[in-house]
Length: 177
Image (cartoon, rainbow, N blue to C red; front, side, top):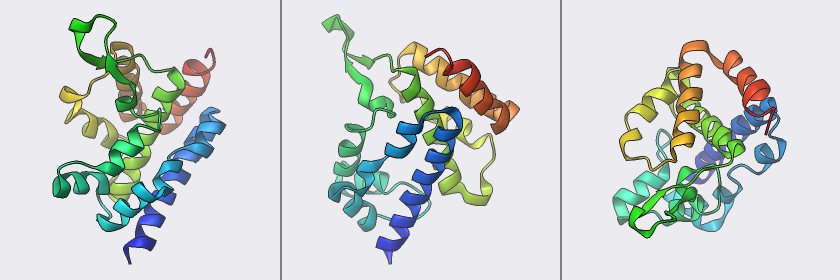
């Protein structure tokens, strides 16, 4: 039944993110990560559109033309770059990515790694997250500094592996923030 499968999927993802957040010292974020996925609007869409290999939010968007679950989720979770899209200081700049606090960029990176692990299962490699990102980055609305940090972490993971990347995050990225 989809209710059990969806619950297991989101809980497995949440526990993975928590493990890696704890590894780099982001304890509060690890505990609170994606709590909104258990809210009625997100959880019910997750059950209805569950597939097991992709986000139910994308399926909901395809079927209904938008995803109420995703709009709810991104508006409550600061680790999503979409949370940080706003009008620029100059009105003529239009919508743009705002600078995210470093701890949320790190959580976004961890979220991407864990989503790849969750959906790809045994097909996951340390290059999976950068490959996913590269196929979509042309339409991501990110602040330049956020993009640089995210790409640095994704590339480091792909070339040097988890151990070195998470040590780098803890000792070099987060140590001074």
